[in-house]
Image 1 (cartoon, one colour):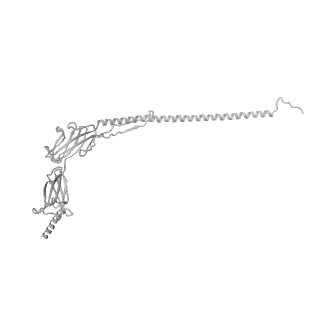
Image 2: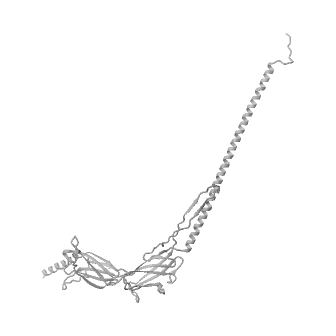
Image 3: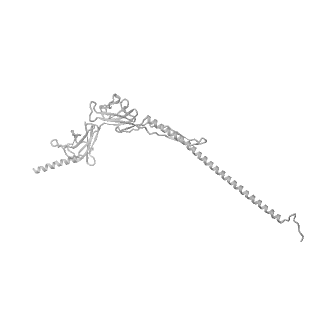
Length: 367
């Protein structure tokens, strides 16, 4: 009995080891209603009956709606790579949108020897992957309308509509027979009842997979546009004063506004609105006031420079005149001094001559 137990344990361990080593590099590529699987296995360990894929929905209350799909061994010899591994691919179709699935790949046993190992604690051949759901993005936000693109997947038979809006212009029906996977909806803010205030425009959009009821894949998006004027570009040139006019002026060129709308809001995040009439007028008035201020400041500066130069010239002329007058007075003083010295010399000579010559009335007395 003990010998039989040992043999059973050995065989069961070998089977588990084969399953664990049979599947490698398990990868899943999700789509809206299907998942494409790809994995590899050793060419020497390929199961004779192929593989089995087990797919279950993962809900918050547990695993639901499990199903299996057999994958036979491919007949194409090109699936064997240089390192001796063999590739397998399969598509799991008929899935639900925006749903998370657990996928397990295991080797397929004989009909009478199949083991269900769904309750194993460790399973390296399992992946968890969600399918795609509805997505949307805003392409343009205008003062009177918003334009969005909704990705629904092919063969969409639902409806895209503005919440609580009447009229066919605020809604768009899908085409269940068309492979088209993107729909464009233009929302008129006035007709569709968008919530408009001084700075933003808000609109709610609902995307339904089934028209009569709301399913788990139904999505509600918020389109939010905010008024934000585009940056203005102003170029100005200054002409320096020439000739006798002595006046400078600046010429302003009209601002340039781009034709392309700036866009922001991936997945319908707040987007910019580029045309705000009040903001543009206010900005233009501020620019004109700055230009007028610059035109006034240039003549004042030139006038101040001219006044300074005039004062400097007057001061230089006054200094020059003063220096000339001082030099003239010094010359007069020198001439007067020389004349005084000449007259004194002549007087002294006359006296000496008079003393040396005899007077007319002087008589000679006999001895």
